[in-house]
Length: 386
Ligand SMILES: NC(=O)c1ccc[n+]([C@@H]2O[C@H](COP(=O)([O-])OP(=O)(O)OC[C@H]3O[C@@H](n4cnc5c(N)ncnc54)[C@H](O)[C@@H]3O)[C@@H](O)[C@H]2O)c1
Image (cartoon, helix red, strand yellow):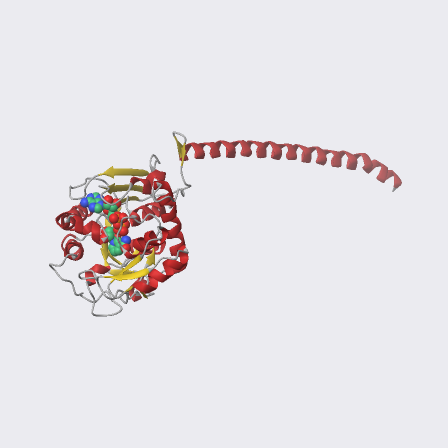
């Protein structure tokens, strides 16, 4: 036994030495591979950085989409308030986004962070003139949205919403793109039904000061369904209710921007009419969620997108005054002609067919908006906020 043990010893020793030598080689190989992988990762990281960086400019990170999943998307009015937030979301998703805008109410600053990015293109053009471009989807948002802006040149507002919409529907027909039209709660006019379901036909004054916009959008919807029926264009119609958030035009003239500006400037907060008229406001990110969900759905009838939580205008004045923290007076002034008395969406359709409902509470949204307004005032160095 002793003999045999002795005889086995060198062999055992030999094999365990061999094993450790093999293991050492393996470890070396693994270490070398690790080093090479690290080097490759570093190279990739540098390439990725170079891709996202041009002329010393760096861009927000975007997802990678392959040629099958990457969509070519046109956003008309993409330099505006809602459009620019939608552009952000589509860019983050890794799609190729082209905006077309005449910058009447929009601002290049809103999309400045994408200028020069490989996936982004900006066309400075009025949509009243036809546009020839190859795309898969069109979000048609171009139109002034606030009363002072759309009343500034009513004929132009009608042209934008009729001729401009025909141009976009014609483009969708030519290239086989799906198109989403940004309609509005204004199609319900001064509603006699509360909350407003999509089946309500509205109460619109066809010759009032708001008619250029309200009737323009109604024709826009009519055109969409005519193209859908006659030309088989795939249409989506979003009836957007009041929306607020950062990048709203400071000169917008609507309740939220007026009240925030007055509160920040320590001016009297002016409420038109009795202040008992109600509005419901949705935060812009909720709207963007809804627009994308609608575009991606198979639902082609109009869908309300809005926040059903209703507040009186006076309540809004008080909430904003509190959040800004000023000691402003709130004063009632003369009512505005054709100002709707109540506005509240019935969002059953959006909940049923898009599984969508607004998420952002009013206070959270207002805080972000107030911060944006403060920063903008600082930037513009207005009224000693710098
Ligand atoms: N913000 C809201 O509360 C609200 C409510 C209902 C409907 N909508 C609709 O949503 C869309 C976007 O509204 P928004 O609040 O972002 O308004 P916005 O004024 O900030 O954006 C509209 C954009 O369209 C551009 N535009 C206007 N006319 C054009 C034309 N003829 N050619 C090319 N570009 C043109 C403007 O320069 C601007 O960039 C509009 O169609 C509006 O009617 C908005």
